Length: 377
Image 1 (cartoon, rainbow, N blue to C red):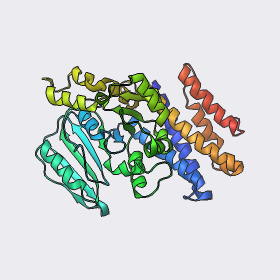
Image 2 (cartoon, rainbow, N blue to C red; image 1 turned 30 degrees about the horizontal axis):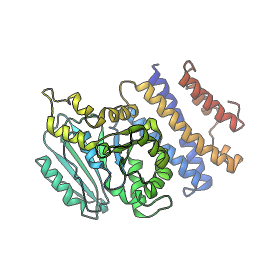
Image 3 (tube, rainbow, N blue to C red; image 1 turned 135 degrees about the horizontal axis):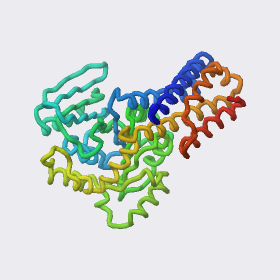
Image 4 (tube, rainbow, N blue to C red; image 1 turned 30 degrees about the vertical axis):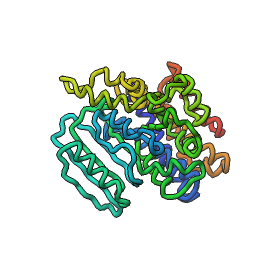
């Protein structure tokens, strides 16, 4: 088997193991327990990873943050079209999903409301689509807009882009905030595959925004964007990265500094090239080449074996943390959730031989997990 196939087999066995443990946890603790909730979160992550690995759906890239952080400008620059409403917008509950299709004929739109009511407005142009989005955003019952249109995006060409104005109030709720806004924000975060958190380079103030990030977002390993670099003459990029690390807890390797406004202006100025793709100068504008590189690290592409390996490591660590927490609380109960040893041995034997550093790390982590439970596997 290829490297991707080996790790995919291990991922499938981990999915079976997590599903069995979750089922047994429900029987003994019920679906309201914290342990069951953590295990269910792991299951949802495994399902998302496997459906992406199998090519059954496109990845969703969601951009989140408070109002006035340039999220829609960033997404428009990614899309290569001024589609999403920018600037001051009425408070909204919804998310907007845009799926660019290079060979589509015309625009297709669907608006979903509370009670599963659906409308399909007829659209003929980008300006008409933008005006329609502005109009429906003011409807408190509008939950989601889905738009498919003929477009070659600037980056991440095989993805669905998600604007999440309905999550803004949740991001302003701080560390202990609850309520409808927080619930909607968490639902939207769970629905996407790649979280992009957008802060303003000249407005790194912390407060509720930073508190929400530290409590709710760090587990998603987001791509962190310091936007509107063009507005800030000082400090240097390194100093901005240090400030963001101190205020929000951003990991520098997961953070890029861009100017979505400059990138969108370049899109408008240069347009498409004759081949229908995007000129390299568009990626250079606003430092979008750095953003493209960060997104590609998280998308299944040419290096699929490496992508599946990283996703396996992430999901196994999620499962291990959830199970070890339950085991710490009640060892006998948690061990009773495990399947027969033959299934555990199948999982361990499906792992690749530890021939390289990454494989050795995974092998050590898996063996260390079973040892911490007092099991000799």
